[in-house]
Length: 231
Ligand SMILES: C[S@@+](CC[C@H](N)C(=O)[O-])C[C@H]1O[C@@H](n2cnc3c(N)ncnc32)[C@H](O)[C@@H]1O
Image (cartoon, rainbow, N blue to C red):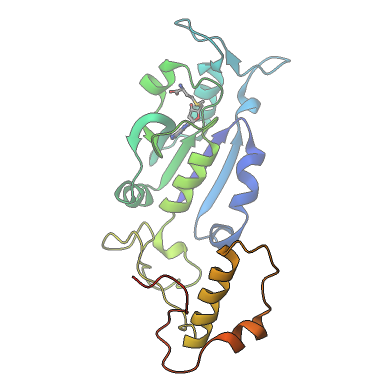
């Protein structure tokens, strides 16, 4: 799978994409991610990428010409070009799974007051929103889509099988209960007692851990500390 991100601020996405699972998957050649600097596609000495909206209104929008050149430069037969847009189709785990099957995903990041409307109408295949809030640019949205849509085999932790929760895996899995070793019952009591002492508001210093442990009464430990509300 190849993902290309077209942005006016390549530095905003470059560092996160070099880290952790996505970074390792890239290093192993499991997913190929390229970041394209939109300004490089803006002609002229000043390489202007924004202008006032064609139909009027305040602020600036991204001009369609540099976006058209950038999209033309990367689009190929297996490409799906997606504009990140707060008014687009909602990005969900199902959509992530759908995107993971696309051989070449192109993510276009808007900025300022958005993107010239002709880009959404004529240059991209669809618009995606990562939620009902407005970010100042599409870069974080592109990272969300990239992280969620990477193929299941892009997990270097379990490279040989589908991993639940990743886009290519079978059923929906938005989160499973996770458990490490249980806390020792005594520790639970101490933690509750410490929390109660911290919220007592007596102004005194919190007792140290050893002293707290001494104050925990002996006998069966219910996991509930003395003096902490029993309902
Ligand atoms: C300030 S926003 C533009 C808001 C503008 N009123 C609009 O509706 O497009 C600038 C850019 O951030 C990105 N963006 C903001 N919120 C987003 C969201 N919830 N999902 C996806 N992209 C978003 C889009 O690329 C957008 O063009």
